[in-house]
Image (cartoon, rainbow, N blue to C red; front, top):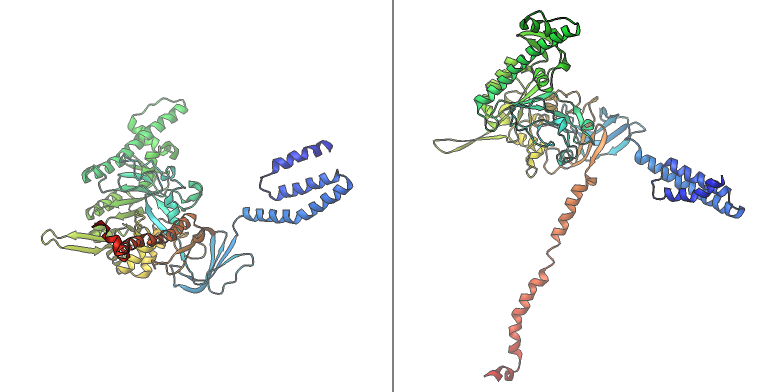
Length: 532
């Protein structure tokens, strides 16, 4: 006991400067009590008084520390707001209840749980987090130099600290489909992520379900070489599976200590059923998933060993649409095809309607052409043509952050201005991209059971002056405009620039010098004639 007492000052010195939690606070009080026990009676009484006075402060500090480290509340209530659920009519003065990261209820006069964290959002608008359906940002580079790279996965290149994700969250985007760019033949796997998280695994909403392809020529390619490279890749897969089947059969005989007594053709037939998913390398695995995941050896079907994979296929011109549809039909992935269209592709509207596949429209909505004879420029608003054809479509955001087109809500407002209905414009940035990605059960609208990705706007989401004030991701308050450090620093600089017009005093000096020559006129004439 005495030795512990002698070491106590050193222990207090070591604890100095540390954060005091509940355990450390209680330990400090108990240690102080132990010290008081070994003191003289007078000193003991004073020390006990100090300890008694310190207990309330220690308890208060401990409670604050625990609150700061507490997990987000399981229940959240967003009340008195105008709710735009996208899939139904807007709700005035509505309430949205969140429970454990999911939307529990949406309506009017809902009973708020007693333990819910309540946000009174009078005068605000609730809108589902927008879904960015096709972006090649947040990664090192959009495309690799090699044309065929199906083994790539954006998982390996995503940077959670990228400013792109910060800006996406600031603009009310709750899910981003990051996928390789258009300058490729086969680019690699995409991934749907939240724009917030410390790691890619934490950000991930859905792992790669789509492979990026392009039927439009990449840089230094023409269309013949582009299509030939695609066909060669698929043909090489079947040859690879033929050789793999033969190898698997030979391995089986080796394991059984038997000699190979058949020709290679027969060995391939017998080895067809022996192929397993783990036998394939990454490159051929993803191509086989694109083609349905079923093994084919010598043209005959084998076992299904992999989950099918969808395809985002880029078409720059109208002539590319027919090539993309034919390629998908011949190789069995037409039902999983998503067409990423350039502005000219509206001319292939009949092929698009016949294929009946969802499309993604580029950020540039206007297609301009110059008449070679008259020189007149004509413009076509492409989304209106696509909407009138009854196709499921979503729109991209622009990549230039200096232009308003990088805001999905602004893109939706442009759709309305171009003649698309307001309801269809809202769907084009929310529920439609969620359907294209196969995530309509989780994202894209404010409905019970879906992920609680809710954005609080100061006004109508399609009003350019409306601001994103709060963003909830999975029911957690992920963004607050008033606490946006980077934005506040940006806004603080503006008043300083307006305070510069304090320099008019310097501008008045020339006026004073202009009056100085008049001073000699007021002097006596004798002074002026002294030089003559």
